[in-house]
Image 1 (cartoon, rainbow, N blue to C red):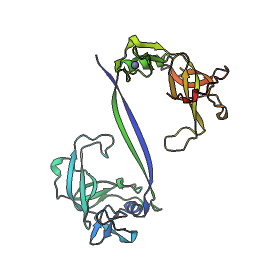
Image 2: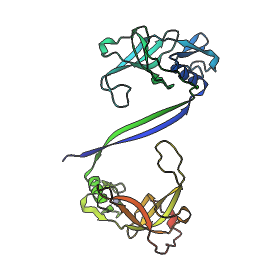
Image 3: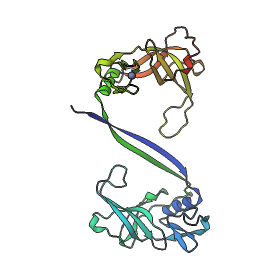
Image 4: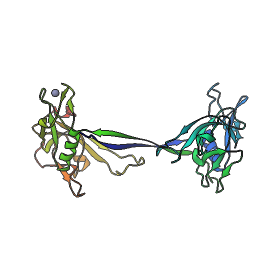
Length: 318
Ligand SMILES: [Zn+2]
């Protein structure tokens, strides 16, 4: 049996303020200058607001230009770059002590081959033509004493913010239960799996009952009702972070399905004004099959039936 798999990527976009020292460092990069910061007898590059050894406060007055060339103190070869790396060809990550600095800057060396890399080798920055005040304004360090690339214009305003995307891509197997579940959803059905020991019903193609450690399979499947009662809800006021597509407040509701002891959590509620969302409201699943690629659950709409009055409903979120 071959197990299918699917890939998923989670992306975390960050926006951070740089503070006076890193802000000055990033601004200087747009001018094709690299700044370190004096701390006693030493010069730290990249600069910091505090000396990590003595904990002394460091200020913008202590900033001083270093480099542009430097010496590779340590390196590692990346033979198979991933999409997260700065190059799609092999390169080295290196700790580079720039001339005039006492600490090393982590950056990349574009040397073509590991045979061209050595500890103690001399490198200089290759500047991008368009610089935005980011560490990648230095596209890479390259073997030699003289900077290359560059041109273009420095920033007209001090750089104060940095945007940063962290992301992780992972591959997960799709089990036969999950494949059948996805098939059912595409047909506009909720497929449940009932544990033969405790009779709990699970969704999502779960492979086992976690209470009884019993494997679940096709023989335990049942079609679940498409009507239920709202047991709890949240009104979400969207914050406009990157990637947010919602602009108006929307509701997420927990729905206790009829006849089976199953609660579907965080479901979209549609066609209901926010001030009318309430516990006990009777709702039905609404499917959208307009994409042509099978059905998708669009959300839940009111059935118009009288509300269920049961003070215990509110306790059912799972
Ligand atoms: Zn069970």
